Amino acid sequence: MNPVSGADNQLRVAKPFLIQQDWNAYTQEQHSVWAELVRRRMPQLQEHAAQEYLDGFHQIGLREDTIPNLADVNRRLGPRTGWNATPVSGFLPPDAFFEMLAARQFPTTTYIRSRESMEYTPEPDIFHDVFGHVPMHAHPVFADFLQHYGRVCARLMDDKDKLEKMGRLFWFTVEFGVIRQKGKIKLYGSGLISSHGEGTHVIERRPEIRDFNLDQVLEQKFLVSEEQKVLYAIESFDQMFEAAQEAEKRLS
Ligand SMILES: [Fe+2]
Image (cartoon, rainbow, N blue to C red; front, side, top):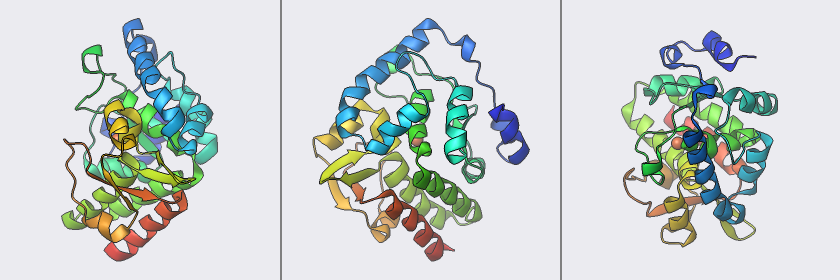
């Protein structure tokens, strides 16, 4: 199935942002940037990423040496959880973003950063979006959480304050989430997975890591541009899913 035509049928607000990934147009240099990024992250992640992330990486068929072909990823991911990594042209406005999450379509950029900005790219790229995010979408509970999150936010579009609170829930789970497994802090948030600097920052225990607490998370301000000073550790992905349901009750 072509994932984009599937998405076309469901998506209304996000439709203008959908593109095709022209996989054959990637240059050897671009593939080698991907390969270097993966090789740089993997030794740390083998030891410090949540097992669910590492399992997902293999389940969706990501490779070290080439930029993923999203159609191949979706052939593996779709049957597992119903999610697709759906190519988009760049940043999406919130209503389009939430519409896609609610439809189990993860907006995925196809561009890859240049060698000059290996560590940090202000715009999301395919390394952050696919390497950082998509492996977790193979996990059934995470997959359900993310769809539910999108549905709740889509209904809160007219309330900026509530949406800001939901944005914090996203930030401290999907983007900068950590989980306690066998007494150790493991990474699963895409910002920690895809950034060597951010991941190292957490592993060296420089931020304060608190037990996940929904009340605190909904009120916890953060700065996108700085390393995180406070993170919240979940005990299980079920806890994260329950937090989304609880947030829905409180904010609806
Ligand atoms: Fe992200």
